Amino acid sequence: MGRGKIAIRRIDNSTSRQVTFSKRRKGLLKKAKELAILCDAEVGVVVFSATGRVYDYASTSMKSVMERYTRAKGEHHLVMNPSSETMFWQREATSLRQRLHKLHETHRQLMGELSGLDIKDLQNIENQLETNLDGIRKRKEQLLLEEIQELHRKGSLVHQENMELYRNINIMCQENTELHRKVDATREANDKNSVMPDGFSKPEEANVLIHLQLSQPHQQAEGLQLKAPKLGFQLN
Image (cartoon, rainbow, N blue to C red; front, side, top):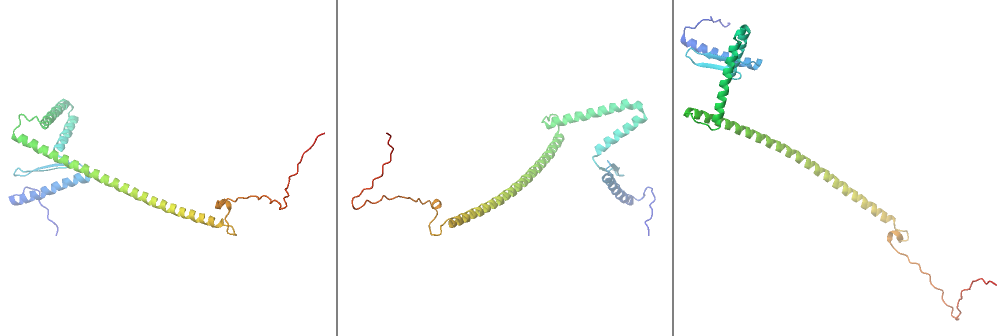
């Protein structure tokens, strides 16, 4: 069976009226939130119960929504009634002066000028300072955490570069060892090929100096002496 339709009129029973108000209020606020998220709309909803309780929802803040609503209504009123433009800008100037005065007061209080404040005002300032200090600490922790993560990332990159350098150095050492081994093998082969067949090494490679000496002829036993002939020309 389908759900029956409910007549749109005031519910006489107070209990039923309270239950219906609770259900419809939750549904209304849920629909307002969905509308703000799905359609990127700025939504503000205010509901007053029969007992005077206030229920509200704002996608940004209720103050922002109300200020935007006031500006929109004022602009619409200006379009409809151009003669009220002066009054509109006067109200805007008054509102801006009030906001500026409030900002000056807040700045003065935060700078330590607390004269004329009662216990409630001092408690509000203390709560505001604690909230701001907590936000500052959280932001500081976040920045430190991001810096630590960045340092870890850089350290990992440096470690990888060092490992790559170590691998390159090991490869170069192996290549140098292999080159030395080939040079030694070539030198040994050249030394073996430089040996002559009769067992003597080549003079230039063995660095052996060969001295040649001519012996003088022996004198004859009979006492004969060899005389070198004299050569010459005589001119008459």
